Image 1 (cartoon, rainbow, N blue to C red):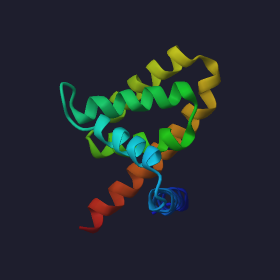
Image 2 (image 1 turned 90 degrees about the horizontal axis):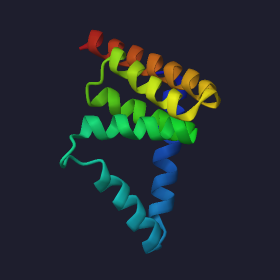
Image 3 (image 1 turned 120 degrees about the vertical axis):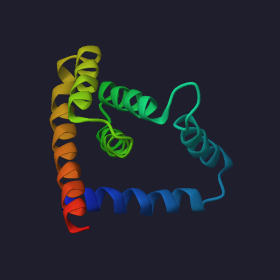
Length: 122
């Protein structure tokens, strides 16, 4: 596993546990709302994750981008579909999205390589 993926996942897990361990109902409810939003409904999980990735690109949130890249991979989004999602985010967000697009593609490449390595080992 790449250091970036390992660090991202460990940091996210540690801080989520810390944040949700505090007795603050507003924070807990917001986290729950976020979780509920990405469950299947009229739109499937795959579509919602792609929408989340576009929104994250436009908002230029690298943590959110990385998270949604991983969730999109889990949902079976292909490389061609990723690049269409990236193109929507770039057109909506403009050239300021380019550095975030680079990091998104780098994270996608690392996660794809990790998945390939995992499949070879089994």
